[in-house]
Amino acid sequence: MASTPPSRRSFLALSGLTFLSVPLAAACGGGDSGRMPAAGGKVAFAWWNIATTEPGKSLFPQLSTAFTDAHPNITIKTTSLENEAFKSKLTAVTSSGRLPDVFQTWGGGVLRQQVDAGLVEDLTDAFGWSSDLTPVSLQAYRFEGRTYAVPYDVGMVGFWYNKRLFAKAGITAPPGTWAELLEDVRKLKAAGVTPIALAGKEKWPGHFYWAYLAMRVAGLAALGQAAAAKDFTGAGFVRAGGHLKELVDLQPFQPGFLGAGYSTPGGQAATMGNGKAAMELMGQWAPSVQQDAGAGLGADLGFFPFPAVDGGLGQVGEVLGGGGGFALRKGAPKEALDFLKFFVLENQSKLLASNGYLPVVKGAESGVADANRRAVAESLARATGFQLFLDQAYPPAVGQEVNDSVADLIAGKKTPEQVTTSITEAAKGA
Image (spheres, rainbow, N blue to C red):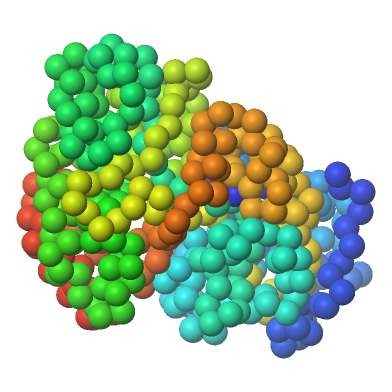
């Protein structure tokens, strides 16, 4: 998924931390094997995250330092990696059977494979404060009623747009249907405005289009049914690709988009943040990355949900999204979960104040001050259905094929039918 920063909830004072009443090692059977040897009762653990852009780049170290200052017997060894680099490195260490003590996860199929391999702690019995978190924020990390990660951010993907550029093209309101979106793209091009910024090089941003169109055309339930049957060749999925091709044929993206990264200089977020494109389809973290990579749009920035598709089975209230969470390797020291409680539960207000994350703690929605972020939070609260990012929801090989095949469609290398065939082949082989 996304380098994404991210709600991806609260990429979330300290007066002292009360340790959990049920020690993690005892609850999960991990013993003391997760403790890194240290003299005098000291404990050290490794923490891998993707906080390479603001606000996490500054905030995460601040929270880590606050925790270790209050608990001098604990050392946190932090590794922060850009999204794609993180995924590559985590895949490598997963293959070796040795995960970091605490590591970033988006849940879904990738986490499920790690769980099935016996590499991840079952937190259910030690995670007594999970009842303080919203059910939707926990959804991606639960399998068969057991919980395997702690969420810190949750949100949804939608269109972020430049109000000034829309006005320049004579567009008075965001589109409500796919046909209206295509017409707005034509109006923007006629006005000399690049309609959409896209990080073609990283592939995951492009999969948002196909995923949403599949949801709108075939319906949310169809995605789960296709995954179970390992068959994505249904007419609704082909039509979804056909609608995406309609957009691609209008040449809506910025020059050089196929080689553009997401948060890199000159990439998707910078193009949007510097006012050089009218829209981007991205998660709730988009405004903070736009500002980090570019100048930011301030009051010119607006948000609207992915539009309806005429004749489709899906509803606008069904959203594609996900968030960020942290899982623990099997045998990680109990202090690692204590740290996550501090990070998420005791610092939710700081995460919200950073304007980079959306709340996972129940009732914290009132703390979302920014109008656009509040619009995302409210859309999520009203959602009639929720689909995790497809490159996380499905097994890794299937999710990667979704990204690769959709990227090939966008690049003109595959037809809508070929996309569905390739994803089906990957599913059958997974």
